Image 1 (cartoon, one colour):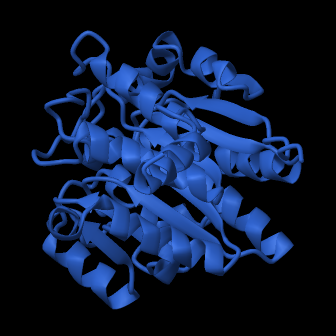
Image 2 (cartoon, rainbow, N blue to C red; image 1 turned 180 degrees about the vertical axis):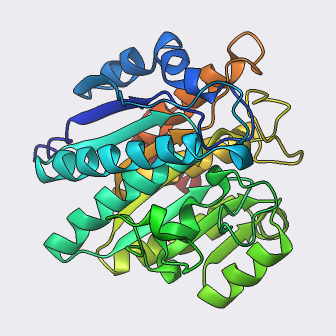
Length: 324
């Protein structure tokens, strides 16, 4: 029996660092292309449609402090409106939207577009937020005012966002269907919000104690049992900075090379992923492109690259057990 055709991948670059704590992630989309993202996915047999980078008016001036200007907020919201429409249209066309950034504030728009599509077809949306941070701050709780630490709170309907943030992205995600994976830096008010809202936070302590396999099996089993659509939002800072230095907000003690790949491989094997963000790559802070290459390799695992085909591996294991 032939395998069902995989959906075409709609690739969109979002070259903005307006929501970030430092400049540089706006160069991320081009760095991922230079590192061979499109060619790698094509080699795996996927049809990749590179839609280029989003453009928008009124880009924030470089070096403008967030608390001294509304320019960056206006840029983030302009991007969110556009990316929400693009994600919705891509899914409605039967494609898989993949957004490469750019700082994590871009997920306000991308996930809201996915949520609108899921609401239309009556399918529950699950979000796997692979990140060192919770990104569940609000303007009232954030110590920095940087909006890349707020997108999940906005998507989950936290009320502390003013009228400037009104849009189709508000409150479309059930926080009980959100899993933050690899967390190791969460502010105290943010932690309280996450606990109250029922977000599943799989921090590095849990990963150390239980291992990636058991935890990811539970996450993916929930999605599969509900017939859900899984959106994966991968932040480079989820990975240990020793192997992924190109992150604007690095935190020591992250996922190892094999842990990160295993997470991606298990997601692919589940068949549950229907949309993707890859964010926060900062080429200015990277070392000779090593973080960009790692993200390309992880994306390849997410889309099916394997050391050995899983059926072949299972047969070999069975033969070994039987003494053949």
